[in-house]
Length: 498
Image (cartoon, rainbow, N blue to C red; front, side, top):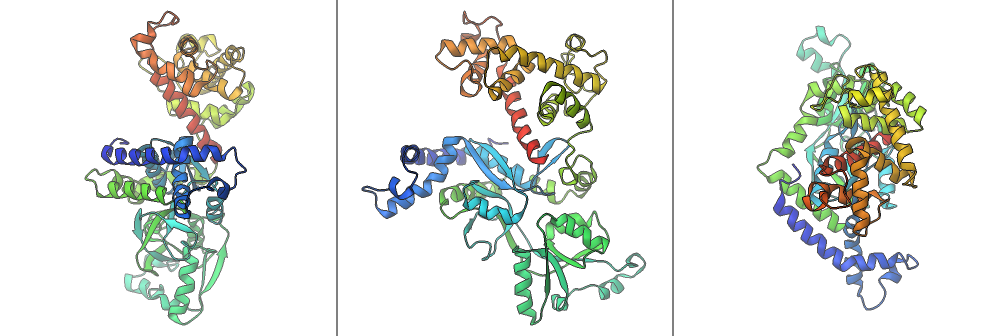
């Protein structure tokens, strides 16, 4: 999926290469200066040159650190974790965009909308990657990307108590259908949101007061719609495409009264990041104009598939309902504590091994949650590998054994963890081969990324697996490499959740 737009990707990479050539030296030299932007850009550069270089520096930093940092927050559509898997409309699109740039995606999930803009302005992220309504108020210190989608704001109101016994015209007579009838009514929305802005403008348009009840950011739109359904508040506002999803959960709410024209929903960057903005826009235009259905498939997955939405929302393993990742969380916590691990890391590894399927068996005969061979399971304390408790017991005993093995050679705990995980997948013998190859070619044998991992990937090449320093022969190193990468990335998501 990430290779669908090769021509566009090549153009982006050419642009980014040019940026790096002109900016990287300046960027890294600045780290040895006082850090003052004006001093870095002093000399023969004109003000226009300085502004252009500074504008390009965001993209240069993204490329230099090989990471796109995106600010978002947990909600039922944008970004969430369901049965151990990071998901969401914005999240999937951001993954594709980061892939087009050839960098990793790092998500920073903030607690509230009000934190987004200050965090972006402070440089905590490169962009805001959750859908924002494009308005003049929202755009005072931000630059929006081209729109991801379009929708309109609608009033969320409760149906009459006996609505199921009423005729349609009787229901209509009891609902607000003309926004002018909101005069002297109280509507609950987040303060300083596009919804509160709209209510302020609507008050002026109808020539009467609409009272705004400011709700804390900690109560998301899902919470406010539920409060309307339960009668705790009278009205709130939501985007129509999201409101229709929640109507499938709460059939006693009505979402049929629009209070705005169609509005654009977009991501946002700082004003000093036009090259990042242009890169996003180029990619979005390609995505939305291509004959490939990927963009529409993602939209329909999150905004049209009502049954999937209901399954997620009713699940105990949906991050909006709490911090449970799987049915085996208590076992992960117990056994991780026993070996001194973070249970979320153990859960991330178990997901990679089995997707939390206790009955799964690989073509090699590995069984259960931690995918252990019967011989390995017996060696490390399991009599019945289909019993989740015994399976996780044996898996963690094996991990502890690997930790003791590697602590003699890899001093740094963060680095050692990568060697442990790689060994669990490929065996420590192949990892030792990769270390010997790294040392032979002048790389650091005690560092995983860009060092030992490079030579593990090369162990499927005859030149390297036939090398005299190699003792264990051929290895499909790409599997172990991706294994480590995926577990550690998923672990970062789990840490955001709990």
